[in-house]
Picture 1 (cartoon, helix red, strand yellow):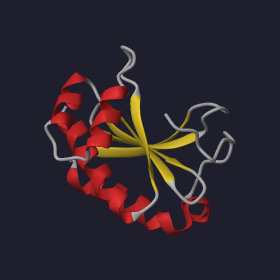
Picture 2 (cartoon, one colour; picture 1 turned 180 degrees about the vertical axis):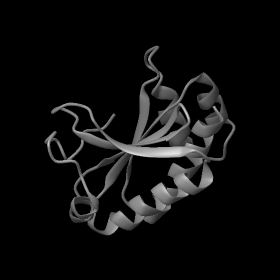
Picture 3 (cartoon, rainbow, N blue to C red; picture 1 turned 135 degrees about the vertical axis):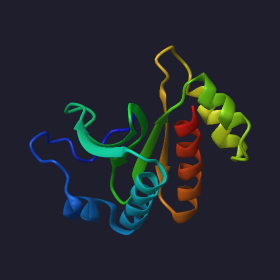
Picture 4 (cartoon, rainbow, N blue to C red; picture 1 turned 60 degrees about the vertical axis):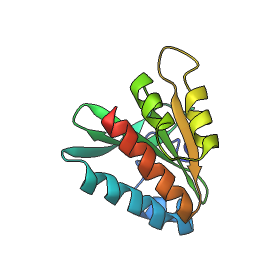
Length: 139
């Protein structure tokens, strides 16, 4: 999982802090969260603190399955998705760019299902994020 710009445990990121950190990509942040909450029934969201080394991430879960982690950074954010073997197979059957499929495949370097992380910096990245989250929801 990616490291957050917010590492102070006592300061839970709020909308104002997110907007200051993400700047123009705040709209993409909001769009992705709205997409997940509206597309997957019973989805919950929460901020989770992963220690001073990793900081705060925004977690979106559908029932007991974590769909993705959103981790704020300076003027962009990371999207992390954990794929099991079924998810990796579905990724191979998708029409995602080859470099994305290769990176997802490489993320399985141990039995704990290491997350696939990517930076969301521009509008065309959001479509890839939505496709990967849809695959995670099926797996």
